[in-house]
Image (cartoon, rainbow, N blue to C red; front, side, top):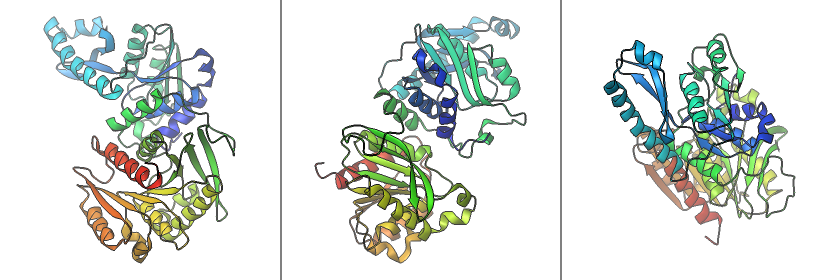
Length: 437
């Protein structure tokens, strides 16, 4: 079983956990990669989400061999057998535990941003990770959760090797795993997109979840404008069925459409982090795939800017049939070129455009025709794309600003970089799409 990314894995995993809804569970993601998976599970179960921060205690002269683990609240899980066989004395134990405790505290404070740890006493706790390699951390997490008072522990992962899966069945009251392939060498090989999950994404997802489980997908067309809408939609674009995720907070004054770039999809954690920031600011978002799965198989299609822009224009017409407010475009990589080309059409009425690490040069001579205020965001350590955006800034005739995120590379994977992108995009769209702002 191959997963598109962690969001896709979480949605599929949630389908195997719906029997837990009646138990009012608490969902706990193992940071960092387990949190995007856990977010989807918590959303589907309409359950609270938290992190379970666990630090493995490694034998000083053989760090990969764990003699125990620690968790928040002073929880210690120690293997007396390994301590004895490793001939570890109290000084060894104290030294390792002191260092790991400091990192545990730092991570917990960073991820929760001041929110208290959820109380697990008497609850069903669902521990979620993006996959299992050896299973040592997951097993330790289950023990820590039980020590925190959970009445029932469920361990849920998308993929694990058969031997680790068998061992973990005894670590929890229930073990749910979607795939246990025999030809297993690493978790990442079972994901099309297994890019690193930055701290900022963990923080954003936990903050979003803390506001409540959110609306149930599938809100009916024509729903009350004072009610949140979150639904998977099918968009007809020139006879092609494009799938998207439409989120419109109650009272939203504008919707931002996302045009992703090469090698990405509507499930991209980078785009979803930005979308979450826009939703929290009261803006609607539409994340959708400009190409069908069959078309995406041919890499040349992701550089067919004319086709991508045409699909985006058709999708904009579909959205305007459902939403009367202003529309903005957020484009990444080649998707940014499609957004600019679509915004340059004579009859386009686009309120604002934001390009993240974009290729505006691919929109070519149409750039002067863009009338929408345009924000170009580029990483300071992405020199080629930075030069292309400087040239585009000179060619654009509408209100234009170039923002450089210091130290960031093309995918903005550095700590804090993607959060800066989200904040810049949020402020640009709010300032140009919402008159009252």
